[in-house]
Amino acid sequence: MHITQNKLAAIETLRRFPAAMTAKVAQLSEAQLTEITPADIWTVAQVIHHCANSHMNAFIRLKLVLTEEMPPLKNYDQDAWAVMADDKSANIEMSLAILRGLHARWVMVFETLLDDAEIWQKEGVHSSDGPMNVTHLLFGYQEHCEVHLAQVDRIIAALA
Image (cartoon, rainbow, N blue to C red; front, side):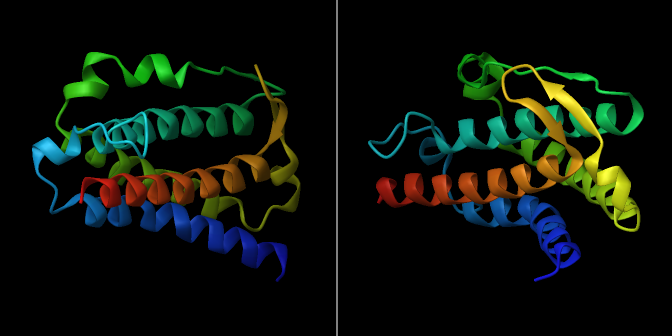
């Protein structure tokens, strides 16, 4: 598969992620959304809030890389964020709304880059992972979406 086809597939994953996550959790009760299971240390709700947190950070990293020369890309402590009040008890609809709007913009940005081969090599320096270019940001978050959809499936299966 040509790299552009790979990029298109990754962008499509980003486009579909909010709806896919919403569909997975649509029938869950509040108790199920916040239940700790043996399948994971996080609840379904925490995973959804984490995705909003992570994807907001990723979008900002992308914008920094596109607009600055070798910008620093800050890491954050996802486990510390996951136990904050807004990640433990907020209604998931808030984070699903963030994901819907954010992913629409994220997809728009990536689609505008498809015809510019050079821009995909622009880099920033991640505080823990080192140099990271636009291509890494796209494929890394395609994988992030897939990993967390599978994580939610495992947690839901453990609820049964």
